[in-house]
Image (cartoon, rainbow, N blue to C red; front, side, top):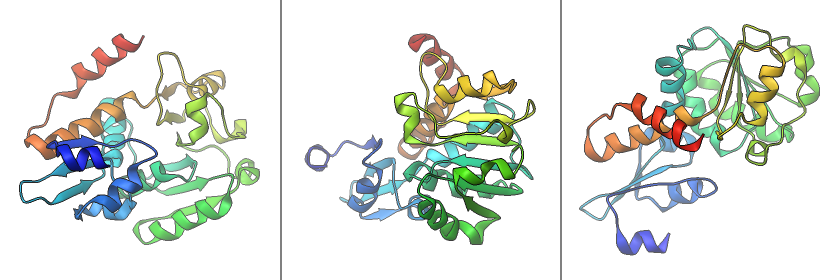
Amino acid sequence: MLPYATLKPPLVNITVPFKQDAYRYATRCSARAQQAEAANTLVFESNNEVYADNTDGIGLVRDLKQNLGVDLAKKNILILGAGGAVQGVMGPLLEEQPSRITIVNRTVDKAYRIKQRFRDLGNVSSCSYDELGRHGAYDIVINATSAGIEGKLPPLVDTIVSSDSVCYDLFYAAQDTAFVAWAKQRQVSRAYDGLGMLVEQAAESFYLWRKQKPDTAPVIDLVRKTIS
């Protein structure tokens, strides 16, 4: 963090694994960052205050709802993973009033702790991968596991999805991510990567700095063409 403290740019975006460090570095923070206990945006203010925010969750929700036309209300949502990325998206997802959010993780205790943190905001449950087959198909499955960065998958079962499910990977790549490919192989008609979320969270961060909301659609198209 020392180069940023010295240079003090107006705003920086923070990526994994430094989001919790950024949250602790700030002198004040938004409700979103406080809720997530992590920050992906630091704003260096003229009074030497460092303001932390977390735009990951709103970026995800905007991509799903506005760009992809996915309604979240009254939906049964499964989240794969229980890391910092999940903490950042739980609040905004629960604000959309889904029927339930289930968090599954290899280390069940981590999923349970997130469930406990957010249970007052909505219907949240946690489980192990061994229990997944007991719950049937979910409306929306979101992959937030770090295994996705390496092109790997957690131990999934086919019954968590149907052809009507929506599958969304927080990560993105030039080709289908391992999770998106897995979903398509199981005839899921709507499977997306997280490029739109990346652009939408950046747009929200830009708004914090400039108080202007950029048009994200052409940016998403341009980045998609650039990485393809």
